[in-house]
Length: 285
Image 1 (tube, helix red, strand yellow):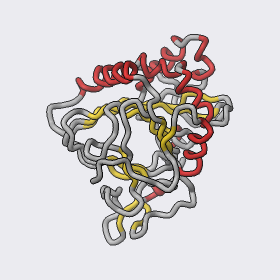
Image 2 (tube, one colour):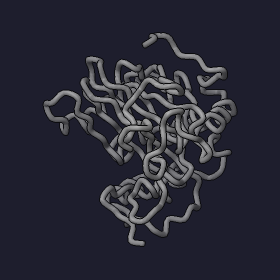
Image 3 (tube, helix red, strand yellow):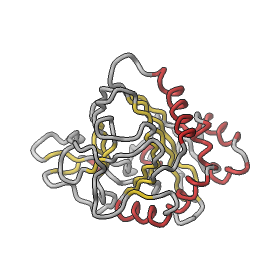
């Protein structure tokens, strides 16, 4: 694998002030990278809070991965990004400056030795019985990820398929989709989520710790095996436009209630429609 930044026939890396170019790239190609968005002190604080949240949950085996699905409720620094203007003006512009709500958050602790993370799209159809991801990932929310050690193919870096974010996108040549287009598989093999990382269309990202990786709800992405020597730490936020219908949803979790009630007036508009998450919830009809 090359150690140099890969090329595309268009710009996909931007300065934090290039708001319209960031929005346009994500809209047209399903992803964008914003360089040097977070200063090093915020990166270090986020790393500490990911470790505090997830490191103790990891067992001694190499290659284990642990997740938080409500990290914004646990991380003061991630929460502080809701008032960090260099970030929030990008978020607002992604949605055409329409009123927005916090949608969800996450953190990941991935130990060296972790295997490939299968190709998938975050989007899921609301086909009963469905779970929380089908509610939160059908809202038009782009993911905003911070890979706090940077991302590189040798260290569990993320790879995406540019332009795979539309309903009309067809599977890569020689592949077909799994059920509900969640992933794809090579023709002639079992219809299981693809673990290959070297086929036409794969685009591996190379980023630094303060960079922001944005990708659209439907963009297909996978994760390289972790052949590095330190845990890969990452965290994310996503937002959606306000006023969407969530009539089929879980009761607001106690942790989310406490989170919302503790927010200052400055961010109330961003959290008043926040749903939290219940990973055990299943639709009833």
